[in-house]
Image: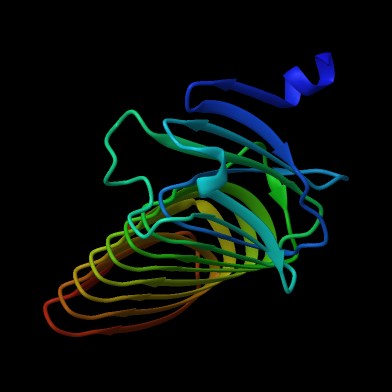
Length: 225
C-alpha cells in the first residue's frame, strides 16, 4: 500500500505516476509536456501532472522511440497556467530527441553521449549540458536553446526566429546555419563554417584557425573573443 501511494498520488486532477518505459534510444515529446533528462544505468519514466487527467497523457515506445504526448489536439498550452505535465526520464542511451508544441527540455546533470541529434520546433526550448562526439541541433519556429558542454563536431541550424546560445558549448569543428531572423552564438576551437541569411546573425568565439563565412540578406557573421 505504501509503495502504491508513493508511485501514484491523486488529488483531483493532480497526480504522480511511475510508468513502464524501456528499450528506447530516442525520445519524442510534444503538446507542452516538459521533459527532464537524467542519464542512468536503468531506464525509467515518472510523470507529474496538474489539472490533467491521467488517461490524457500518453507514453509509449514505438520503434525505439519513447513518445510522450497529450491525447487531445490542443495539448495543454491553451488550457491556462494551472495545467502542466512534467516527464522525468532516465535513459541508458540517447541518440535522437525531438521536442515540439511548446515542450521544453532540461538536462539534470551532464549527459555523456556519443552521437546525439536534437530537433526543436513550435516554440520549444532546451537547456542542456552534455559531452558528445557529434552533436547536432536544429531549432525552428521560435524555439530557443541554451547549451553548455563540449563536442568534437557540432552542427547547428536555427530558423524562423529561433535563438541558439552555445558560447559555453566548446567544439573542435562547428558548422552553423542561421536563417529567417535567427541568432546563433557558438564556440569553435579548430574550424568553423558559418552561413547566415534572411536577417540572421551568427557570433563565434574560440581559436578556430579555419574559417568559412557566407552571409546574405542583411545578415552578419561576427567574431567575438
